[in-house]
Image (cartoon, rainbow, N blue to C red; front, side):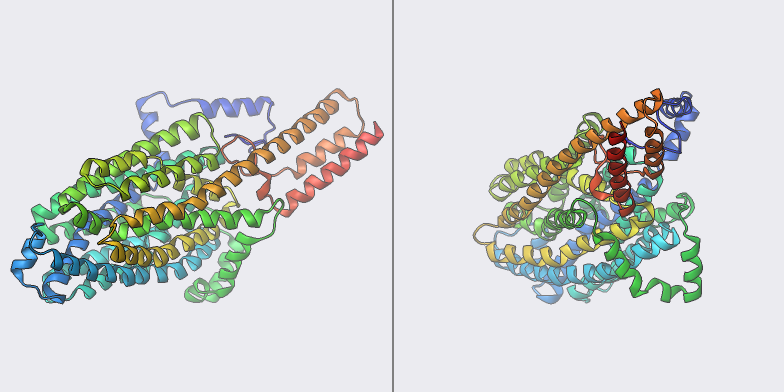
Length: 563
């Protein structure tokens, strides 16, 4: 990707500009320089990996703890039956397995509501506060504290054997909800990445962050089943708590805060006080005004369409996470070790697909982000049929191969969203997208658990077909975005050719009025977001840019009349 605008006040084609580009392209030569270059460009990624891994690592143990509590405490089946279910010796206990799964599935519905409703509200305040104070680190550190407290709480639930399943569910959901959870963490991470990167490298850096997520998940999954077998609940939850501490201290002492402080807003916040400033309702309204303000060429419509894409792409992910382990236990009689192997395999194939998409489609071929999103969503839709109708293990293992491009849709959405607004509005826009993400578990988790409970005796994989159908609108929206991007790219290319023509006239002195036109045009020029095509997208300009373009056309007409 490239900008049509001069950067750092240096005009393209000048000697200073050429020297600047040469310096940017110069690669580090010595081993020390390469290390320093790598160190400068790796910021929040290790912290994110140490946040994701323990969360996934403890996820399987938490589900098994809920199953154990449901069997031994809530249903009081006794050690003989519950031990048999734990060993996956379910031949004589099919009814008991169904009852346990129904109970856990119902709890997953209300637990997801608790886990998502509060972050959905808090993230609006977090985004506005982060923009006003220029602080991204609190948005990343506080969710880590909540997850650490959850790990400690689950250790206590394991120790007190008579505690029912509902207490473990509340412990799992409450602390992350109070501290923002994954939604606030990702809002902070992507806002931070957008602050410290240029438009050209942003898609690649967002892809790298997504790769860290993709690496953290399979690593956590790979060890979750094995560690649960070897060291039990105490060991798994203790390791998770330790990794959360590593993530917290890395973020607190290694990650540097961005410097985008608005001094006027900071002084105003001091007058109000911390809590009054954080929970100011006016700032929440400002978040919606920034995201949905009217702009040229259907700007508001595009933001709304992108939010719909977030909902229909993120939603099935949360829905499937709520029931897929129960599905594999019932359909294929898998143990936690077999499920962890499959999950690791699925994440690794997704990682390969993401690396290929980011490296080849985006970085080398410069394919538009929207077109990459289309390919990703189609991969998800096709895989839903493979998962739903799989009757053998090898057929289920075919699903991740078909779905390997699905992870790229998250990169496309984040890349497009990060290029919509200026740096001091990134937190607001990312918080709004975070709200859309946080709302999805409230809708999809109860929906998927209900569909799974109703179809478990007919077609247990019916929820996969539901996910494929709900992803279909994203394909249409991405295609629409791609079509509009291409049309605007042609229009902007024509304007650039006209601008170059008048610049040449100005350089040759053939027109007395051209010098004034070029000067006014250069003065009004502003940076326009790039969407992976190498052509700036005019749909997300503010009113000043629109006015500047209108003035430019007026001056051009006057100049032509003079000629």
